[in-house]
Image (cartoon, rainbow, N blue to C red; front, side, top):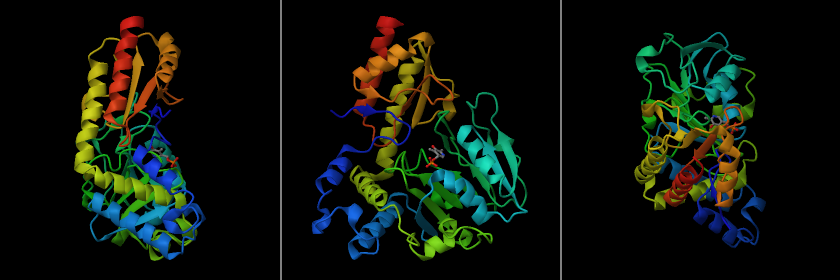
Length: 358
Ligand SMILES: *Cc1c(COP(=O)(O)O)cnc(C)c1O
């Protein structure tokens, strides 16, 4: 039986996509073998790869002067890849710190360049600093931020303005959740395992003028130009992940694209926050305007009941609701592939738990 999987990542995938992958697993496109066993240089695979890139370009309306790269090493690899490609060793890069993923990006960047923390949300990281609080470095190599903090459940309600300085964003847990104006960014990156497909793949969408600036010593597989010149196939790409990501992009198009997904995601998040806010038993600590549509952490008035809550939820087919190991409590990740029915089932369970145990 399929459960509703609220994991933060690797995360739930659309059932239709899994069914298609299952149906063609042993014999992909009449090749007599699975897509995992096909050469990445074969005509059939190259066609699949190109279609995935063009579908993504269409979904996100990526302008022609941006390159789309399918890389490895996860978003964490890009924590290093970004300064290696965009910041000369003496340069300053600005970073906004809104929580745990920002902190990891900052720590890694510090190994390669000077980092100015342009703003630090501070406290328990339940807010997003306003534009007016950003202390930006004139001539910085770039400004980096994390539009959605997956662990804290904190999401920017605005796109920071960085003037001439390229804006770089870790969209790992919110890419494709709604339309996005790519032209405002110098570089967007996202690990696949939250809202795209299986782990092992990281997308980089980078403006052309930022390609070809890697510092000497940058490994070729992290060099945007080397990868762009070879259509992300300088070496063997994660072929299965690329294939599933392509199926997800086609699924998103069938759903009506990102405007339709945005409406659904807004409704799903609203339903869950309404349940939390309408009760004195559950609570979410994030300032309302900065609440994530994708990752919803919550606590209970009686924390000693958490184990019982999680066990009861799992029995009801609602799994992976425990909060991140560093913060505790609960967290429901409700990415694109989580249907409204899953959120409704969770809300019904929460209400019943409060009624009987609260
Ligand atoms: C999950 C996540 C990462 C780390 O991704 P990996 O692919 O494991 O390296 C980085 N940033 C954000 C915002 C994330 O949600």
